[in-house]
Length: 295
Image (cartoon, rainbow, N blue to C red):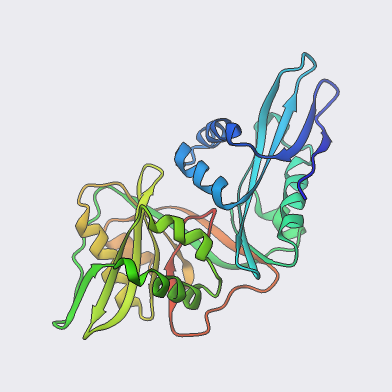
């Protein structure tokens, strides 16, 4: 059940932690711009659509109200959830609002295992709340990357067919160890998905969609790293000069290769989990994220 709670914000003002409303999203977008995050208003709207979302509302003595914090939890089936877009404005830092937001989101998660990607600033709080580091994550972006997919003679890359959507969702479950259907289904309406096929067998898939300053490549799903590289190279080759971003787990080993093709690493964070980390049950692996807030 969604409930509001009043939190202390000093003698002159008070804050309320309440469910986020659609009309809050413009203020949330402004907060993320202040932090130099790339999210568009449309990205916030999508996150809100698929998540349990909370806002910190600041009320001044004169009655003026403003949004001063945010947090979102996206359920991933019955067993997992991803947590992100946690922001507390600079003026309210150090008052325990970040912890209160996290506790509210973790309450929404219930018995689910919770994953997130943490900056150095956020990591100490997450560790105190029971999160443990599971991997690293590197963010790469460029407008000048160059690559051509290296394909075997009997291989090709083609668009995902509409009737293959259920198979794509099933493959993602195998690769990620989570049921992300309710997250990926709405993305399929606007995203492009490339399928690597060899001798009639699917070897991998890679989604490309608008996000932030341009387009993001992810998720990329394959059972072998060379197949993942071919799919990434396909999108780089298909959009010369475009702003492309990709976020890859450290375990994939893709970071040096991405640098070689001109996708520069601009940030490194850590992936964390509270509970049991997701684990694929087959050779399929996820080689890039949907984005940092959604996993």
